[in-house]
Length: 466
Image (cartoon, rainbow, N blue to C red):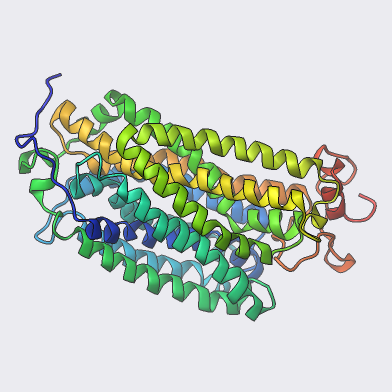
């Protein structure tokens, strides 16, 4: 197939403040991803749904979202208006996210089958509007700048605003500022303050991102810059999926990494690790602050390296370092006789754990941010290969594998908690490692000593005589 050359060989660059502001679009959507980590507590503790039901509905909604993602990309690529291609979608989708949370976090006013059906409908609607805003983050980067040395700056700003600002600082605010005001429980009063705050901050960040993109949200920065190249057919979509090998490989890798990143960022996982295994839920907020400086320094170093050796090098290196960190941290916990005493007082092994946890978080989250920028490179490759500008379709191909992989995380966590005895609901952060007699849950394998239960920590979760 013929290769297409850009008419102007010079790069069109963005100003640094434009890249910084536009990166806030990812922060705006990630705020909802962060809040989603608390949904299981609302659904089981406030709305009264069971653990496995919530996990299953979450998984099905995300899987459905993954199936329709290519359609969302097709719509974005064929959309244009007098206000641009991307900015109207950013605003409308963020308003849709607000509406979806109003639906989801009012389920306690319903009951029975109506409650379950509304949960599924509201989750599907949420995932659709979320995908629209998240796809713009991937797609619009190709219009913002096509300079390969400048594109890695997005990862740096995204780390500052999203990985650090949303997830690290957000975790501290929740664990150390909000939770103590509500008896260390994710109760109805907590959500009545937490959810409106998420919606307001996300809308403000979206507006700032629209300002950052305003100069570049026009046809001459899309692909070859011709209006005729903007329209895609369904045959074009199939050609992209079938013929773009770099897209296939990176989408698969991105989905696997996102599964791990979403798993370790879920509040139920953090309660399991810090609240139960380490018996100190307040520690997770403190560690989130410890994470800020080393994460920013490491991302700054990786950004500089990526500008010289390419994003592929830093992406692969980060995955390898992350895998090593997780293996070593797992070994450390396995050889510790009583993990609940690891920080009582903090000794050498405790500091080793903190170092490994920080390293694992940094090297796991970096690829999830980098893949957003790498999708812009693949968009340019597709334009040179076919002459078509397909940023939306390419962005949603990543979302497809992302959604399929991430749909497994709530199911996996639900099965783990149900398997260790938490059948009717997830444990609260203030819940002791050994449930009291009044709060004991039935172990699904009461008459069978499974491999998990041979560990002293899991033994403590089982009712007496299990």
